[in-house]
Structure formats: structure tokens, C-alpha cells
Length: 167
Image 1 (spheres, rainbow, N blue to C red):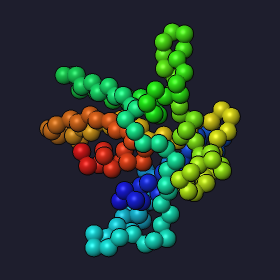
Image 2 (cartoon, rainbow, N blue to C red):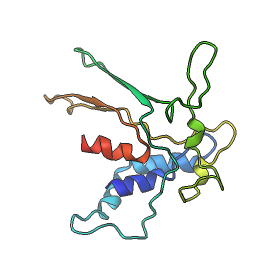
Image 3 (cartoon, helix red, strand yellow):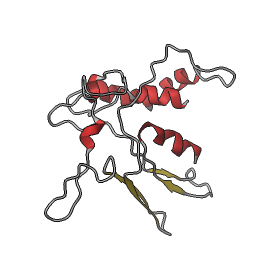
Image 4 (cartoon, helix red, strand yellow):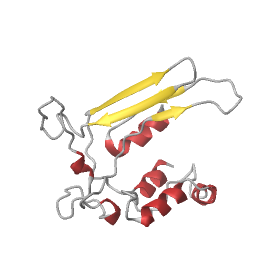
């Protein structure tokens, strides 16, 4: 399941000016796509080798912060923020704010050393936001059901999804 999800995320990027990203995101949450993808999952064998698995250019590390707030009135907030690596870009503003290095989250053609598959949706371009794997997550019981709320976050590049799923 995680291999399929990560394969789908390789087609994501900044949706402004690129309708394929919007269509990809809509397809990822559609019931018909879920039904189709569910047919690929088999507990007794691995996925076919022709499933394109990205090797994400996103750096791993511990340079993220998170704030998880749960109040007694069912008000929940999950925020994850990243510098993208220890000390971010290494630039500090005059007001003392350390700037991140989100530029590393873009695919840099001919510069990425991890043999990732070039995806035009995440190429470095002016006014574009890079793809990121910060996953603030809130889980709550179904409407009208009793249960426990869960609020968590993860970072660490493409490993964040498996971390959230394991928790």
C-alpha cells in the first residue's frame, strides 16, 4: 500500500499552472481509483517490478518541529514545520528567524545525486512551491461514535508516510 501511495506522490507538485497535479490529487482520493489500486495489493506477494517507485530527492533528517494541540472542546490543531536540514539554509534574518532550505525539495535536473526519476511537476521554476513530505495528521472517530482522538506529525522525507501509518 505504501509503495503505491509513494508512487502516486511522485506525480505531485505545485498545482498552480499545472492541471495534471490537480487531476492526480483528485484521482488519489477518488473511490474508483482506490478500488482499482486495491486490486494491486496482495498479502502473499510483492507488487510487480514495473511499478515506478520514486527515489525522492528530499533529504532525510531531524530538522522539523511540530506543535500538536488538543483541547477539551474537540478543537485540534496539528502543525509541522521544517527547516529541511539542521540550521536550514544557514541564513538568519535581522529579526533572528532561521530561514529554511525548501529549495532542496525541488528536483534539480542534472544535480540530484540519488538517481531519481525526473518529474516535471516538481522541477525548479520561478514562483513554484516544492513538493514536501510534512504530514500533520489528525484522526478522530466517526461522527456519533465514541473513541480516542489522535494527533501526530512526521517528517523525514518519503519515510514520513510509513511512520504515520505505523503509529
